[in-house]
Length: 227
Ligand SMILES: Cc1cc2nc3c(=O)[nH]c(=O)nc-3n(C[C@H](O)[C@H](O)[C@H](O)COP(=O)(O)OP(=O)(O)OC[C@H]3O[C@@H](n4cnc5c(N)ncnc54)[C@H](O)[C@@H]3O)c2cc1C
Image (cartoon, rainbow, N blue to C red):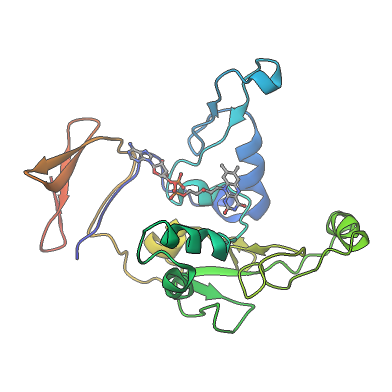
């Protein structure tokens, strides 16, 4: 199989891509920049017709390079509902092997998790006055705590699981395109700063994409880029 990657934004490296806090802070400054489309919503009736800032990641890693790092799957009942609605292959039991295959999880070692995949995450070990005060009301109301939001019991409170490696932000761009291990890049063709305008098809088969600037690019059998 050949894979081509087309990305409108830059390849983010350096402090914004690595520092767990800096990416978040940059995302919440209500302004668009190279790493954030910085959209505004339409006027919202519930906000007295004000529009709100809507950050959206741009560049390698997409939203994962500016988000809050929380690693949280959907609830198992969501997947089971999808399957029950007539979508074979979407039950929790069906999708769980794909979650575990993707994970390189550093905390939990059981049937719900994997530790050999490309996506690194761990339970957040941080205990701060903020986490203590947000846990207090849950304790007072006798809410159950859970050690693993992605495990056997998804409901409960506790510190979140985060996509981090070695104390640094870890996103899909790092997992698949710029792996820290130095593994060869996975896509056969890779174009940053390229905005896809439309896909091109031959009959019913998609054969490429047309990017802004008029470049047509498709994966080639030899793995080299063909334009
Ligand atoms: C501030 C913030 C905090 C968040 N916090 C969390 C969190 O803690 N936990 C969590 O699970 N989720 C969080 N999210 C949401 C999460 O980041 C997104 O749901 C996730 O990144 C979506 O992944 P995606 O691959 O669908 O799309 P994206 O990550 O949005 O990736 C799409 C990519 O495609 C590129 N692209 C789009 N159109 C084109 C085009 N025409 N041509 C070329 N390239 C194009 C974009 O530039 C972008 O890089 C947060 C999001 C934000 C913005």
